[in-house]
Length: 268
Ligand code: HPA
Image (cartoon, rainbow, N blue to C red):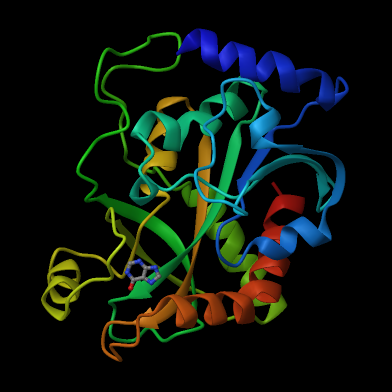
């Protein structure tokens, strides 16, 4: 694993051209606009990066984008690896390890999520204040590599309160309504049954999705500061979960998420 991380980061490091890139982003639902808004210096297909996971979905090839956004040098993942696609947890979280090796200290992620808080509606934005890990496998299972982080990492403040406050402030100034809440992460790929949505609400979730939790756990293990934002694309109460609805709500949220994250990044 250490060898693989080193091979990937040795390949990418020269592309940073000697400048510190301390912000990393996973451009999930809602953050696609960052790719258009950022000044990209280098765009590297994942397939060209040694030891990176290989995309199994044709036409779905991801890229690493190195450039600037909100006045900050940035490493961005355009396309993530989901557990439901069949990747191992090691593969899902490998890019986070590589980002850390490249010097990234702050990880910003976005996702699509179903709202289980009854006051949430499709199109809402939710800053993640905490998560509940419901994935069937833990990304840190197995021998711990002390060089990467401690055996038993704490998960209090997994989502930086400082960045949550920054986002709340930025949203108020931009006039963007912003919810806050707990993200429950499950493996998918089926959406939840009504009984499962009720269960997630009962155990303390505000939103539910199929990503983010593994990446944030690994980022925290590596000592990174994390910030996450969910686009509420459907609501449990409306029973309107579908891939099309998720994509449509994601598109509609894009300009708001991009503006908000630009503001957060520029004030880090
Ligand atoms: N459940 C799980 N993942 C999701 C949902 C949902 O309702 N909406 C978008 N991603």
